[in-house]
Image (cartoon, rainbow, N blue to C red; front, side, top):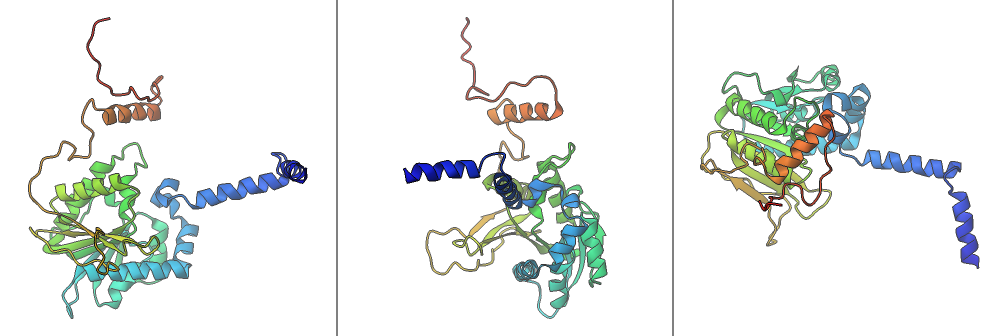
Length: 314
């Protein structure tokens, strides 16, 4: 009896019209929105507006994380000691990763798509030069300009199609091809990034290999949910590279901390990042494209989508 009365009172308290229910729903939506990945919220040039850029740069925890990942990326570059190098910082933002390069005596140039982030970098009077550019449109530097490149939390943005003209495999290939040309032979590029799923990881590595890079993935602290970090280490003009050792692995067995690929010629049906024509994936992509374009009525997907017909006459 007491349980029924309590349930009745709870239902009256949290009715759809009550202010309490509205507040709970509003808080739930804010919580869900805050848990979304930034690249799902808006394009980078819009997401990192003036407010977000200042918040990002003034957050002490974010600064600490950014500096730690930047120092780790520089360590993976394995630059010559006591010799300043010329480094490209891809997705430099407000210059936090550039500061780590400056502290170690290197010269750098940074590029970013967010003008708000670059404005703060100029206000902070960073030592490197910064420029406004979309890495998906390729590099515009002379061949062999840089001794290395780093990128912190930027590469995963290229996996999103923010505009009708964006095609992630093409943009990734364009980016890696022009980056390969801008690097000195024998140099490295290190990317710290957050792939959303294995498909994104495969897409990124396949386009990098197609552009001529060798190398692989180094996973620090693979058993930790919070400390786990992925670094894509790419080599320009090195046939059989040796990947650096991952952190936090200990002597444990059965934990994959490295994944390498070479420049050996291998043929894949899906090398260009496109689905095989007439396959189930190709049909679903075509239907989804027609839905976005609003071209007439498109049948919903089902278990029969892309299934081969038997060819029997009816």
